[in-house]
Image (cartoon, rainbow, N blue to C red; front, side, top):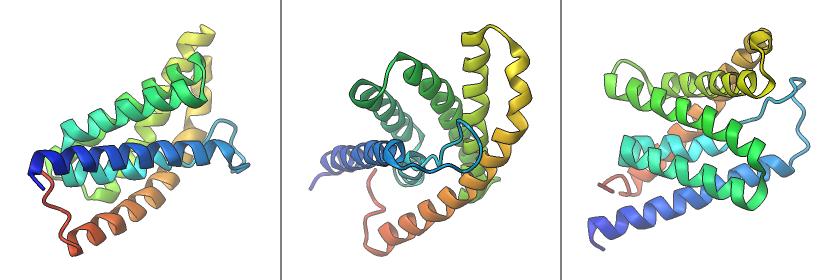
Length: 170
């Protein structure tokens, strides 16, 4: 298969995977004790794409996942919060990976916390007050924890792809 075809197939698979992770996360009655906090499972797929296919491809997969998931399963409010958190998260992850100073785990943690910052910023605009930022420390802690877990899972997947010769996508 040509590299371009492989890249399209890879992106399709990982976009679908990210959407499935988002949908499963919506269905699971997981309460981690922090209202609004989520596991961020879709970020596992986006992180793998970032490390296997690069920043531009990961950005496209993340945008597609957010738009398609919002259309299929969400509403306008969900879209606003997802796009705000998702875009800040992917931009931060791309920049940190590009710097070469952070491990995959560090990039994942930064992405998880950036996502929460983006969502709090969107919430402040929607509700018309910056006082919602008082909730940020709690969300940052959950962002660090989920970033660690998701980063570990993404690293395992990336290593598995490399062992199976699937790391030469681009």
